Image (tube, rainbow, N blue to C red; front, side, top):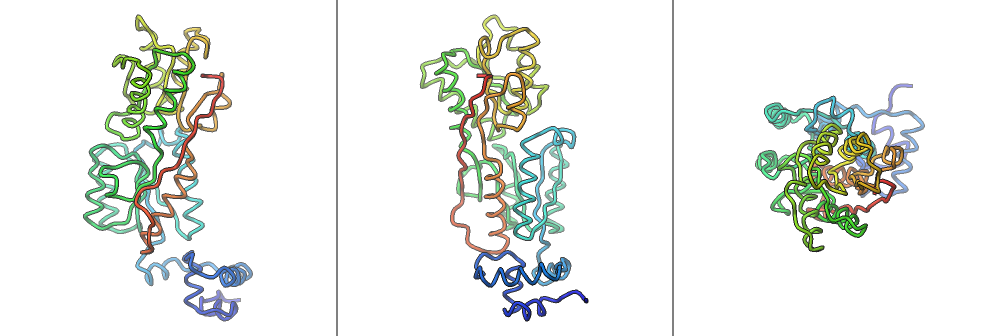
Length: 336
């Protein structure tokens, strides 16, 4: 049987061609009964939309863009991004969109990628991650009127559409937990300076210390990257101090794993001599020895909300608010 057209699907479904088109675009305004009739016909006949024709009609590509500031090697080892990318692919696919991912670590290559995306319009919109306190991407995209959503924070808060955790609250939550456990010398092993997620978790760490009447010790705060190697090197350095910390807040789980490895190589007992808390509640946290306590951020919820906000912009539908916050919580395990 020849491939069906949208007009033929409309006749078989007893709806208008416009309704078929809206169903294929994932328009939520379509009556559910009509949607199911159209989907039943599509499934029965194995209809696949012609992406090129759809693009010409709508002036859209049906593709969302994500540029990750990691090398491919780092990306392969990062559980946060693997979960985030998989979830975006899932939620974008449900709405009839595909995801294009670029990985670029150097500032020059990142700038070239964004300029190419703006010039060619080969994606309909962008999901941005890991915003910097001085981030040239946002003003450039706002100037172009290009649809984008940020996973993270930007100032001023209402300047862009964004989805985020309360990272200040999360840093505070982890530090307060360790203080309640009796720790007074708590270190913060961070990622790069200038990234809001690192700066905000550091600010929450500082708040918790101040409210508990504890002095902030600069020698206990070390900045670096998001790698296990950074956690290992930093923990080795911290343990060589004359008054080493008794507890660690690590900016993410990979960093925490590196810190745990360094402490165990020194023969330290976890958590009796050193308590460790990470962030993201990665799948491996329950399998390391000892199982890692971690602040759980709902990565799937971040991905779903960011994808929905971006698609609403692309399709020129109302976005109810500019900023969305996804709650997080502490998962207690043996490391703390």
